[in-house]
Length: 287
Image 1: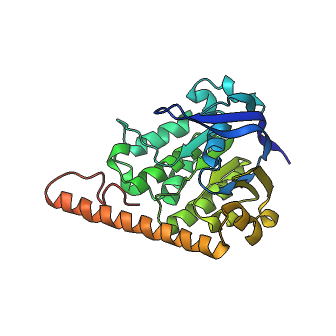
Image 2: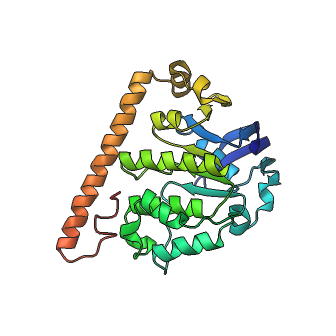
């Protein structure tokens, strides 16, 4: 098993900026993540997002070290240095740009770190992530779903050998989630790229991963082949609820998110009727 990311005696704690309270997250964590497709699964608050941020060098440990392809993340002092090794995307990323998205896609690809830049790759991503309608618009002029799909394309165009993704498909429609995960995994296997992700959807986590990193409240993360580790019993132990109830909770989450998207569509349509500009033709949260 080729190692992609290694944690050596890693300790990390969150410090609340308001009251100064300290929450330990990891204490002396030793872990090797394989260079494959790894899904992180577990309850909220068990350290999934923190581990992904540590793995990407977005934050550094209080003690110990994180090695990305043998490089200590403390040495990755700037964004270009990090992107040469690992690309990190997460939920609710936002940024404003002066150039239209189409030009940005071409620029990112041209400046990326691929050993070989494949002709037609940008066009392939435009089709896969349904970006044709937004190519002439800037990032601040598109919906949440459109922006998230654009960011997914950026992460691949950088050409980083490792992809770290925290809830990368949260704002997408169900069919788009399936298509995005299918493409990401196909790309990772074809290019020999390490892919590490967390999702709300357990079924997608199971289907689209080779390895599972299972998080529990009172035990270190447990790594193993998805086919062996993803069982009804282990999932129930990790989430501390019956599996059937957990699936109902997932369905409720999707229903609430869908309702919120529909509400924002209606609100955006109302604003446009009054002559106000929205964040895109379908409103700020449309996917």
